[in-house]
Image 1 (cartoon, one colour):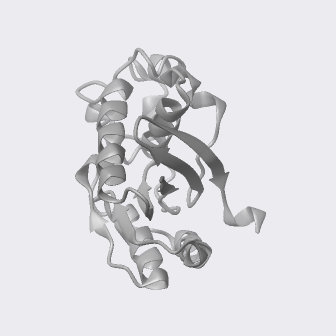
Image 2 (image 1 turned 120 degrees about the vertical axis):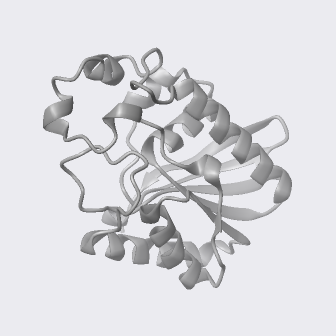
Image 3 (image 1 turned 45 degrees about the vertical axis):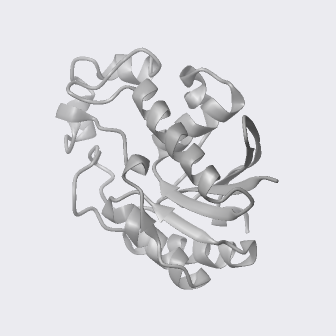
Length: 199
């Protein structure tokens, strides 16, 4: 008996010039709405029994498109939210390129921390705890969770027994699907970073 969990990164938004973090009011762009529709169509064949989402708008809009396609109302899970990037939230990538600690954050994600923000170890702890709660809630079900790239990467690294430094070795693209099977005390990766570009 296993839970099948589909980890979905939210679809694309238009704020490509700055680090959004947990800023409110970041909606999907036109391309993102099309991507979210693709995710909904893709998941129609998976017999989902529940859809969960990060509380941030870009995830809620992605989850709404999925929910409409599979006739399920998405439920918000705060622990699926984006990593807290503290003082860097909302800053342009041009400004961040010269900000103290930015290079360390990108080179040593397992040891660095955004100023006033959250470490990847903390992200790993909250997402793995959430996934275990969802596994217990749906011990033989098929469920979807809409979240963010770093959060999904943390979950995948934990599932595979990899250190968080391995996060840079694989991609989690916007509107991508990563699937895993979970059982008490273990699990395995079924699919990584499936996108509509492959269809």
